[in-house]
Image (cartoon, rainbow, N blue to C red; front, top):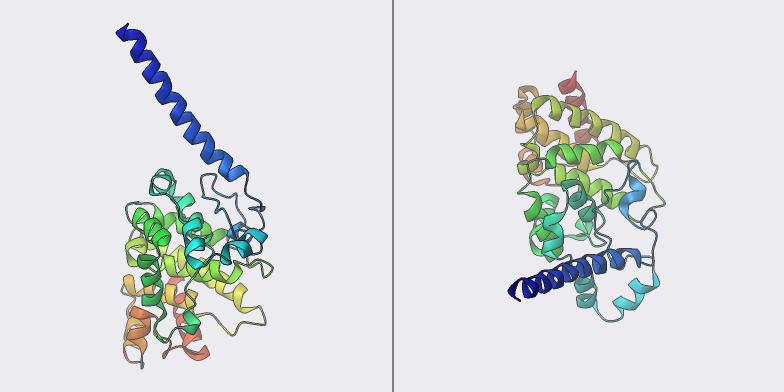
Length: 268
């Protein structure tokens, strides 16, 4: 009798687990949008991580508009990813899930001229982003995973995520806890990729140069104690504050080109 009862309990637990799993799978399958188009997937020339989260609503859909009528709190609640789901994700899936998050801090409208603290504050305050960030900090392969995304990035101006994906990919890779996972040779490779992507981005007529790739390149060179660069930027007004905080008082086309030229010299 006890054996039979135990079997029933185990069977019930199994069915419950299967049911939860199926519910989660069905939730992804019933999304009303094409993830190949309405996620940052359109900005990367690689297969989308299979375990990346698909948000129930995204910009450009009728559901997104309807949800906004209920207020922003309803939108944030709908975008919230369960902690248990994040913990099971691969590192690649976590990064994709972050890059797909529909909301970003609008740094250009910030009263602060320092972009990087504003970005980190967003990661710490927004519940979903904070959860992703904290989970990533537990992983040892974030640096190489970010490089994989970076290599496959393609600028797709038709995508809602085109600018955000490039901006946030650079800023994520600029976080010291992540780039410190890389060896010197990997940092050189990342700088090489960043130079290529920055050039691609700069060729678009609507851009006069992006500080994001320059910020990443500058921090990578600094982490390797590249003396010619460090000695130069230490003498420049707002140089150190740009290096530490992405202070835009430093930014200008000439200073951007200076960082890029040091980056090209560093990888030779």
